[in-house]
Image (cartoon, rainbow, N blue to C red; front, side):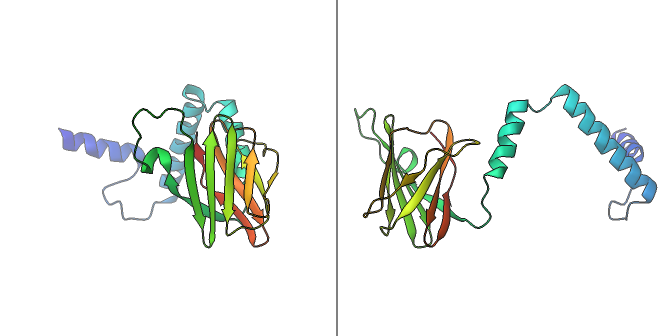
Amino acid sequence: MSDMNDDLGDDVLGLGEDLGEEALPDEEFALELLEEELRQATAILDPVPAALRQVAVEAFALHDLDSRIAELGFDSVVDALPVRGATGTPRMLTFHAGEVTVDVELTPHGLMGQVLPPQSARIEVLSGPQAGSPLTTDDMGRFTSEESPAGPFALRLRTGGGVVVTDWLTV
């Protein structure tokens, strides 16, 4: 009985027995029609919220094609051993992109960090469609911000050697 149902399902979709065959023009049209009907049904029954669609479009607009990605090498939430009785400890993050290392400390009162080797850089905290106020490093490569990011965020560093963007993290 199940073999009969399987054959019926293939016939309805126009797939036939051999999946390795090239689809005929009528079969391609049937599959495209089915795909379009499924898209329309999904749009009606489970639409993407407008706010989510807008954030996705704006996040793509923030994409910098020439940037290097600084990968997360250390996160105190994941990698550090918990200290008994410690509350409100800052979150420590370390990102690496080639020879550049970015150390960041997140607290409820803001963030501070350092670019190593020390160099001048302009830093933007990305946390949505708008980049935050630009930060600059001092002679030691240090930077601070009075605002702590909320939700997903990344850092974009513009140095003399190019653009570096950290992995996105959620606070």
